[in-house]
Length: 268
Image 1 (cartoon, rainbow, N blue to C red):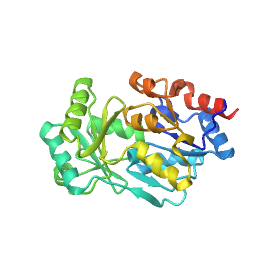
Image 2 (image 1 turned 90 degrees about the vertical axis):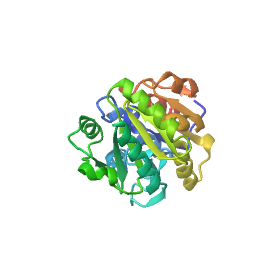
Image 3 (image 1 turned 45 degrees about the vertical axis):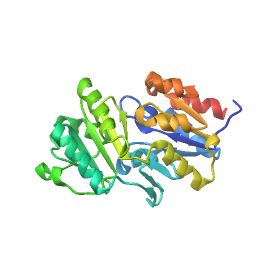
Image 4 (image 1 turned 180 degrees about the vertical axis):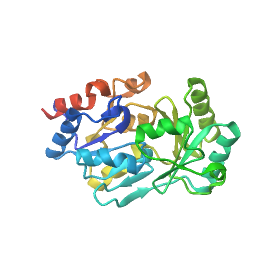
């Protein structure tokens, strides 16, 4: 193909990782081959920095990577923070109180740590099993934990509660935070100025790369802005239909090494 990107931004879960949350050899080698050809490869993930870093290192990424849905950009070699935009203490407090009043589960990301009320909660255990990071239980003090959160995450394991949580959160905090969904269970909340498109744009600027030279891969609601914005937006085969409809390319699924299949076509 004639188009060759200068930067490839990849979501992690549901995109470069398969359904068993594993990075296959084929996908890893495709990303590494892109880098040997001078293409910058970065993450654009909702994951917190510590849980994304093992995959960043496994692939060997050296360019500034995007974490927390765009709320933080860091140099993966030095750990230096290039950009960070947290929610603010007041908004963090308001959201936590709102979730408490509704009886919904929510967790706080602060200082690269994960804080919860009860780490034995099945929703916490489910999240820990995915990201391989241990939550810090705070008990009842969690609801009065006054911090400037990088990100907040609501989790509901039944469809009805999840849909209501997403809808009501977006309605209540429409102009105060950016709320998106993933895993058909997570409501991800970051500062209203923040999303993956903005994070990738800022990372690309540090490298002198323009929007039209960026290829971005994603599979979920929190990838929407990035896929729409990128010069070449790629939706995974396992993505919802609305994401596929706005993408320039629809890749095979994450279980079929969809990222690798697309990259291989553009590199050959």
